[in-house]
Amino acid sequence: MADEAKAKGNAAFSAGKFTDAINHFTDAINLAPTNHVLYSNRSAAYASLNQYSEALSDAKKTVDLKPDWSKGYSRLGAAHHGLKQYDEAVSAYKKGLEVDPSNETLKSGLKDAESAKLSSSGRPGSSQPGMGNLFGEAFGSDMWAKLTADPATRLFMQMPDFVAMMKDLQRNPNNLNMYLQDQRVMQALSVLLNVKMSKGPGGNDSDDVEMPDSPPKERKRPADEAETVKEKKREAEVEPEPEPMDDDERELKEKKANAQKEKEKGNAAYKKKDFDTAIECYTKAVELDDTDISFLTNRAAVYLEMGKFDECIKDCEKAVERGRELRSDYKMVARALTRKGTALVKMAKTSKDYDPAIETFQKALTEHRNPDTLKKLNDAERAKKELEQQEYYDPELAEKEREKGNECFKEQKYPDAIRHYTEALRRNPKDAKAYSNRAACYTKLGAMPEGLKDAEKCIEIDPKFSKGYTRKGAIQFFMKEFDKALETYQEGLKHDPQNPELLEGVRSCVQQINRASRGDLTPDELKERQAKAMQDPEIQNILTDPVMAQVLKDLQENPKAAQDHMKNPSVMNKIQKLISAGIVQMR
Image (tube, rainbow, N blue to C red; front, side, top):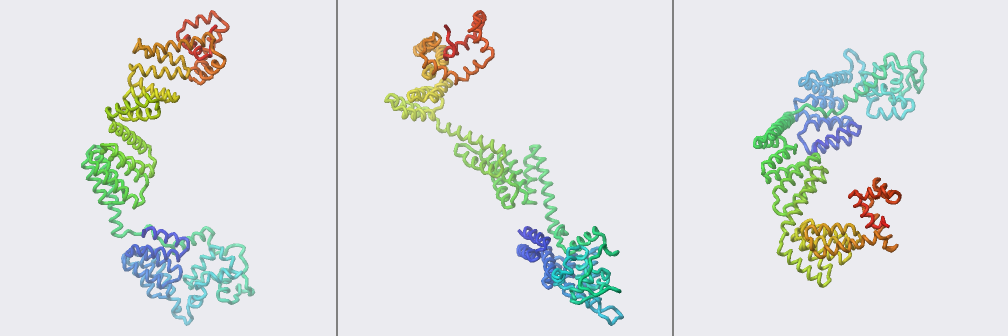
């Protein structure tokens, strides 16, 4: 949180919002009162607002906390300079140079402080006051407001080189002689001192300064001017990063580096199935750096491989908790949750044991929708359902429920019968008789698709159970799919050749098919049968088959070719289906 407040302060300082920067640095100091960088940054912000007393206090605190840090002396010297305490400023810069002899900022500050000290006391051997003392007040804190308000100098404020010169004069008025050749500076002095100044020898007095057509000879090129402005800005800026590391910071960095090395060792051991070594390495990594939850998730993976599910779950839960505290990558949190769910699945013994695993996988998916996690969730839900069926399995109770269904069927209470047959199938999903009985109930209620599905399931469970074929054939006959019903009855006769119901079914189907072949169907019956047949995918395939299209054409136009077609069993079977459906009639 201190780092976050510090970052906000740096951003505000860079944007020129010095008051906001002070507030953010203060918040950071409250959270980390021994961080010398925070006091240094706030000192710079105070100095930017010309609040040099506050800047001096923070600079002294910086030096107290970190006596071997050169920037602290730079802040201290700048604050003394701002308070016109030039001797103290010179002393501060010199102490800083003892710490860092090559520091250019300290050298420049020392030079400015010594010049200001000389200017304030007058030049040696002269009774005249120094130039800085004479014009110092002109370059005070209200300088920019005066220059912006006056029409004569307002345009100059848009010129980077002019602004740079005025900033330099504000810092060190004694440099005025360097800029007297520039008419804009003379005009600015006129405004700041509220006096009229001549352009020079031969010139006339005027309140306005003529804009030069070309830069004076001593002026820098635009690129150099821009660079000068940047340099001036850099000198005043807070430079929080990179700061020289103190012992604590250096130790923390080393720990993080060593933690990563331990992780790599653990990974290598894991690949070699050396789980004990992997656990040891990941544990060391966690002890060195608790801000990287991958150490915990990796150790959890090892525990999972070792079958130590409780330890795996503990590591995953700790990784999730720590990851949310640190606002870690959501994918890492999802990985920890998925690993925990996997361990819970491994431990599951009853269907209820799958509930926490399923819930954990769902939480992982809210963090990151990983395909692997989704597959694990689906597998867990399927395993739970299968286990529930196994736990519910009871053939004795299933038989009792089926008997109750039979009683309801006899009383024509078909919905109640279906309910009992359904419960019987939950208790014993392999009971073919229950499927057959429920198919009969659906037939009575006119729910043909449901009945057909149960009849097919009955045949699937027990292919030799004749009742399944009679149920399916009856439903198909009722749906006027006579050719399909005939196939069903004939299939049943393979297992039970003398079954009277199956034989009667065959006879009824043949009778209906012959009616269609003889053209004995009424127009309404023919229309109904054809409409139903056209919805049958098998009939549709026959009619769209180019070979069958030619066969049908030959049946009408080429009797000899038609006879050849009839010798082909496959073609004959398809023609028979079309006849049964009423699509083709034989005369």
